[in-house]
Image (cartoon, rainbow, N blue to C red; front, side):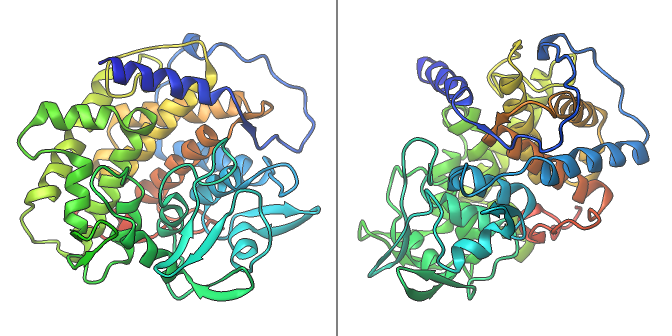
Length: 387
């Protein structure tokens, strides 16, 4: 309990540190009410909801502009997370695709990749400049359509994305934060149930990594505590489990789940139920995530909580469940919050995780967004039976 409360306090502090993506247009700024006093709005008809989402995403992607001069990889790669490998940033005033830029070996603050005998290693850097978690960059790219044979230039030499995958496999060990690792390896391991020897000289598999993230199959209390102790209220651990399970089911649609895969399914269903139980009357999800209902006057806290939880739900649930009224209320709340704050410099992680949740929701419920890059079908659960 104390560990959970401490994690939530650290998360709230981090939200206050860095803003991101100031809008480029100069318009009269509206008065923004505290997030906790917003009156709930009923979900509009399907066509209107789709239009609301598209309008919100259009503004975030094209009006909130980031640049190499003012932002670092931590902010810029969150933009890629939301909008895909073609997401554009400014380089000396000129629009460029962020992924193309770094894969061509051009400089970006915080994009630190080092060659090793076991492959390319993305370094963790403090201060929200570079990678904040093991395998975060590879996990972001793995949610879109970046193939493992994609060339990447590092220190003047040519490699491929597969060299990042090899190092990720090597860096497995008991107790590792594997939320991003299971996203990357579930996308790229073929066969998905292969085994390998990692840095600790032990045999590893994707199922073992999933089990480490999900906790014991039949010890619900221990598994739930493990989820709640994860990054951003447990949403990143759940997103990792949902993506890994989606990728596994896309390859093995008729296999009965067991071991780590069964544990992942149990944790996901528990978290979906808790998200609904803890939802606020406004449609926002609790700022205490899956722990208990909790409200706040802080806009960044609500943006982070509702955005991250919607992102998880959009990975975890098929279309027919995403059509439920309680999730529609959250989508309406989130679009309204982003509309009211369109003139405010918002915290980058919260902003782009919210956008990613809306991108996924839009894709699964209404189909492809005109002009938008499509997410990886298996990772998003679009290649799973019933989605």
